[in-house]
Length: 380
Ligand SMILES: O=P(O)(O)OC[C@H]1O[C@H](O[C@H]2O[C@H](CO)[C@@H](O)[C@H](O)[C@H]2O)[C@H](O)[C@@H](O)[C@@H]1O
Image 1: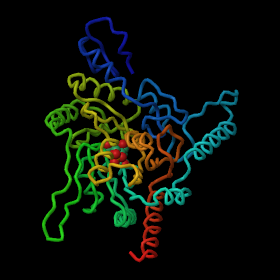
Image 2: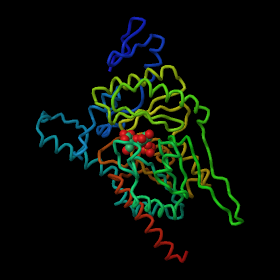
Image 3: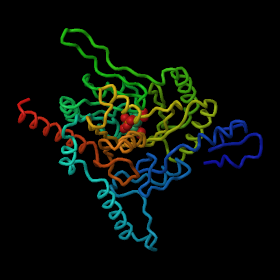
Image 4: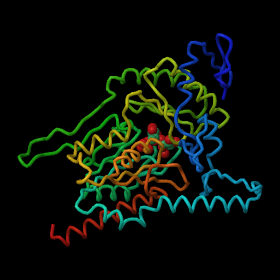
């Protein structure tokens, strides 16, 4: 990526040389350039060793492992055996084992979770992509399986359940198709609860909250500009998620990642009220308001009537950098458990881990099964 700090002329070129930018945009560009996160197992902002790198694109490139290889991402191997495959593999296994030891599988920790829920209401929060559906190339085809849907439906019978996603609420609803759930789309900026019918057969208005509603015209405008500005780069996809946008890198040739990131950042120089965050091979454009998946979790707990830590055990399952905001809220409140879905060691505020969506399904099923038996035993 071009070094944006060394410009001495009144304008400079970025990336592939196609983008020209004047100096009065430079400061803003540098701000945008400092997006959070380091590298990640799938370009999601984290590295196996916790290293934070200055450039997201560089770190994504450095740390995206071949998908067939389930081993860890990077190693801090200082013993002069860096070129020895056996030694690197040993270090990888060691990293993997020590990460699993510090973030045990939620499946093996079920008893602890059940015990912690004694006298409390479990509330379930579920991310969508990479948690309920496997990561695929085409964002429009990230379907969840019928078995997963059934597992979510079953768990929602016993515990209030919310889907918290970066996608727009309607789109994630189209995938999940369960009207009894709460949905928080656009990274929690678009929240809606299930519509309820009271015993008197009256429709009770659903919970509804859109803290970024005023940004809607700006997001529409930036969407149109980004589609136009990036259309020459093969494989790029700009996704409109109502109160935020996603620029997908997954199908873009790695040689074009720098140029694409530069294009996005240049567009954002004109929009100081928008910021960039990163996910799995995606750059996300969002309003600068102090609202994220963690705030959405707190809002939902309050709306459900559980502002108090003593009455509730929130469980949040997610795979992405943006889910860390929710994991951190739980950790800071000393309440509930964050569960990270990952095969790779990652820096995380989650307490437990699950390797992939199929394990999420097993976990949900086990939890629902336990509650069913428990309720039957109690004659409820
Ligand atoms: O919060 P989430 O529900 O996890 O949404 C985050 C982003 O998920 C989607 O992108 C990711 O999944 C795609 C389909 O598997 C994949 O192609 C892409 O590379 C991933 O980044 C969604 O398309 C984005 O809009 C969401 O922001």
